[in-house]
Length: 360
Ligand code: AMP
Image 1 (cartoon, protein in one colour):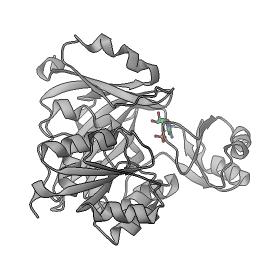
Image 2: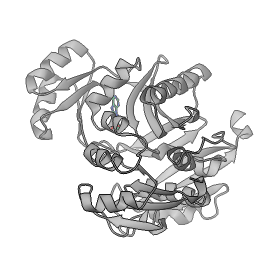
Image 3: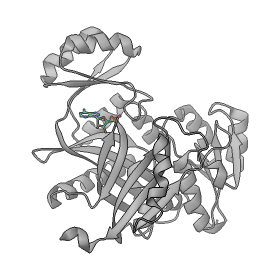
């Protein structure tokens, strides 16, 4: 099939789906989206929208039959849904990567098994496991997290002692948790990698990220990092993408420690918020790479032509948009969400600067 006559199906209908659908339109590729909500950001720009639950097999079948290939923009889609659709149409990235990234224990174990270091961690199924883990990890402080459905810091508590972590165990109301050593990091970075069916990859970053209230606030490129550390971060992302046989895009969040070590924290099996600047600062954005790779087209040039700072507009921040109307180099992106809620990602602004001026 000719690439420009493909119809791509995207599970999930938030802003990531919206930005992939916009990139697809530039390539002449139609997008059908599937999600539980009406009037969603992706629905506004898609050729067709299916509104249904991720377990509605009849609706999922109709969706799969309406497209040539399927991808997803949200990592909490049930793996069983992906496996059901895989029987009808190809899905990229596949169920394996999704399954690894849906559970923090599976994720950390997989990363360590392929030789990618993480913060010290232990699986927790009972308060007694916390005593054992604190004894073994011997850190100054710890972070206790739920293993599933945690994002933007939800389901996480910080502790200095095992007694305090044990009190949280009951409050978090989950029978499986992970206790991690709290990393005293120098900075947080991410690398985004696109990999095509030919095994060729394109890398963005490292990107330097700052979080506010556990939600990504700004992403800056180039990151202020030693060249060797930056090269290592890219090698780690490539190692992961090759190991999982990625077809699509993934984001890898990492900590850089004060002594120059890199510890992987989280895999996003999809385009990543820290890569939104690529729309305006690169010939080929992360969203175009997503569409290309899942539709069987080779990866494009990820080289940035500008330095960039991306700022998320969270909740009421969206009202500050007029401050950017006349800012030099500002590229405004709003997601078409009508209801403003605390913590809700309403849009982002990327401010571009010439690359040379950042080297002074
Ligand atoms: P996560 O949900 O794992 O992406 O965590 C959200 C944010 O919490 C991260 O971006 C960090 O700022 C912080 N965080 C999570 N895990 C750790 C850790 N082990 N050590 C230090 N900070 C952490």
